[in-house]
Length: 303
Image 1 (cartoon, rainbow, N blue to C red):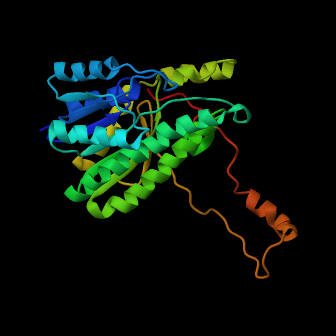
Image 2: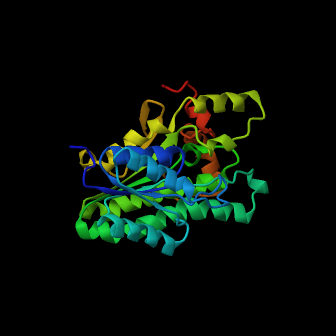
Image 3: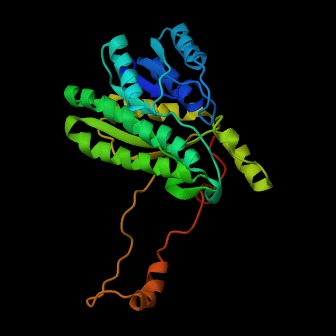
């Protein structure tokens, strides 16, 4: 028996890249899949239904079951339509993979409000919309899997991505809250920070040798490396895995830490600017360095 036999999954942003590989593998593992993709460009502009349709055709050609969906996750009512299509098409819903995303990179002091809002709307609001629309179904049936996509852009840091980083850190907060709120109903929620070459990564500027080297490393990591981790988290084997952050970097799986206190100081008389300044050095020893992702993962991808 396949690992996801008799399960129904929604994969958002499933027309290309990571989402496409996830949809194909979930179908191969026996799931019936709603392939959601607006068919827009990396910046979210445009619409092309054939992007989702081609993945549906590929799944069907391999003997699986799938339907295409072209609604935007950024709109709450549209997210409800995606969930309803799963019910109408396959009679149930068991897995939601919140993968849809766009990029509008810009250094902070030049980023427009529209650029910030657009990225938040698709990534963070979109993940909430899908989660909120599916949660009552999962609560009622006392089972379900939410698999969300965060990023080291938020977990660690990257230049020129204040909108994306804020959205991805927000998604982690949403994931943890979902795991807590839904645990009593045997529903799990986990997050994945993917390292993989995709059309979104293809927008990274390569103005100097270090950026060119970074992009070449990314090209070694296929979106197909991400899909097995998603399939595992969607399966019954992962029923006791929830509230976690996994990184997938080529053939390496990383478990990320979560914020916890590392040091504290106490003053019985209360604090002032001067007294805090006096003990500053004792805290600085435990400060987190101002790093970007490539500083934390400087080694070659394990592919």
